[in-house]
Image 1 (cartoon, rainbow, N blue to C red):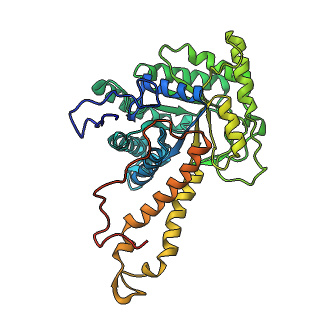
Image 2 (image 1 turned 180 degrees about the horizontal axis):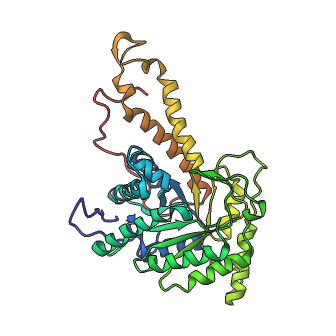
Image 3 (image 1 turned 180 degrees about the vertical axis):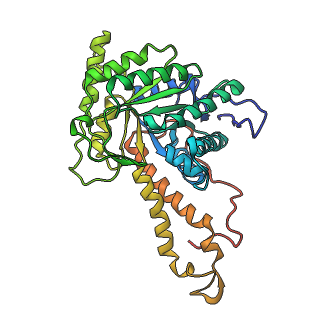
Length: 401
């Protein structure tokens, strides 16, 4: 059995270096960084699965992701956007110079680090889209990474994304290369975006983007790969555009073309003199919510190792609350009084833990489908999780089934 790991704040006992049964040596439960991150992503590409990446905005949404990953016996990517990180810190905090967004992301990272090891699965800790005007947020997070690296020999986060897809192509590569040079010194991975992901997410609106910008060209992907590969110790992934769109859309309105990724792999293999069928690039699939299973599986065949999911998990979280209210409506109209009597208390129904747990369970169910779509099932080899013991609930007892 894999030895228990403990976050340094919880115990002075050193972290376990035991590997998980189905994964290569060097990957242990908890947040993976540096060489372990590289090994895990390469393993995903080799074995033909992608890891779901979920945008989180609270401890509850993080816990749902960790529980889902353990249930599916697989790794997961937990990521924060600048807006989600600000919300995590509290909307009442001043966000001048992105102070709240920086603090929120760091707080979320510590939450993940404290619990990931307890769930027993590998977790990639990542930050999502960072446009040019949000780079001060990333600068603050990299400073936090550097301080954590000095103390613990690894960065706080596994990786960060830079999204300069709206900037001139050469500037995008120049900035990303410069940032990767800084990140590589402390073993932080980079995700860069080429081409534009359509739709709207977290205040970034590309609904009116030029359709041509939704599809990356093999030559552009090669230029980015070539530049980033020159950075010593650089570890990077590329979110190339192949028609991706954020948000919800009617079937047929979005035309994904995963073959763009396959063509790019072939083009780069020829440039590098690699054997036919090699996949030198680790690709990222943005706008995964609502995508057709055929497109998802084809993209994985072409080297996608990460797929973002946000819109669908937002809906699943809300759906859990909505269904809870519908089921217990008559017990949620006042602190006292329900169908059992006007003097009967309703505390165990309006206790926030009850409705939030319903939201978590709904999200876990949606993520289970995501893991299955991505072939990311029983990757770790831990088997089914045991039944939790000593589970505490609302003071007046658990809710009726």
